[in-house]
Image (cartoon, rainbow, N blue to C red; front, side, top):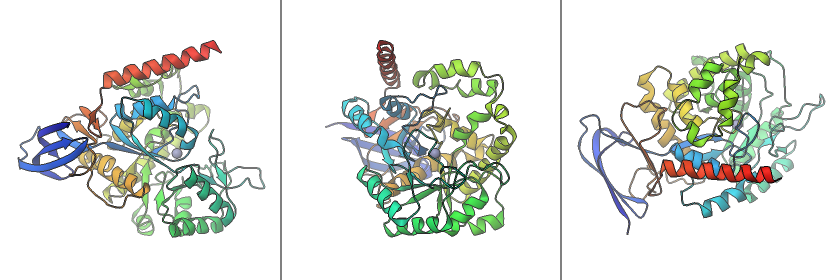
Length: 433
Ligand SMILES: [Zn+2]
């Protein structure tokens, strides 16, 4: 029988002032016992990170290529991300993921997904609903029967929650409309049908107005924080029960300067897990894309608003930490640690709270989406031994000291080698064509 012991670790999510002894047997915690007062400087034990807004099958690379799903799985565990919420598209790679998982010596992260998203039909002006521009199918809905069909086919594909695309793509109320939008009637029956079936519905909105409309129609869970203004007390009163996912890392690449790219790609883990052609690309960036596309100022302001709104959500214990990974420049695994750094900024007083939401908060959400209502603490006896050990005092964006998934320690060097092998094999295959 495999048995493993951790002595004198701090577990801040259970008790900030106490140290614990922890026993793991056969990949499961069997004992988590307080043993004394915390003196300071102890290694901290936290649950693995949960990425709450990912797109595993979308292309994160600047040349618009998607990494092999076997690589994506390893990119996550390398960075200590042990649970992933896929916000649409996963069925595209579900078979490859399952085959990779069965063949892999390294444990994969747990994943929960929604199948394909639902969005608006094409409108009279010829605009399509948001989501149609991605290389993953979406369901266009106009009637309750359309929605029933979408839910049924998503459930058949293993989807356990509903992703609704709503935004018309404006970042500011007067900026150009890019997409058609669901009508109030469709929003209302969608929220009602999802609730009646016990399906959590996540909706994407950009502006406060969109968020307010969706909230009025019954939605409470938003895939991004509001980006066109900083919410005030009256706004929060109106959106009292709303939860928001932070996605700063996924929006930032568009406005990054060459120097910011260099800093962003210079952290540990990038070269070991990501496609190095992104580094070559970053060296060619002379000015941010936002300047070329005329959105540098609005996007910069949007990110500042999103961060402030995310931190206000954090203070209300309603923030979920995600990245929109799979969008260009938002790398699987790596960008999750970027997100923590972006949220924290220079405010060290946020460290523990952010880590708590990124781990315990994220896991509760993951469990909710996967239909597990037991609400057990992830670091309690009987739970899978999936955790990170962190050195106290290191930056939030640093790699964990050690990552363990269901009792199996992740050997980062071996993971990096496997990623390189899969990449090399893929490149060979391309050359043969
Ligand atoms: Zn997304």
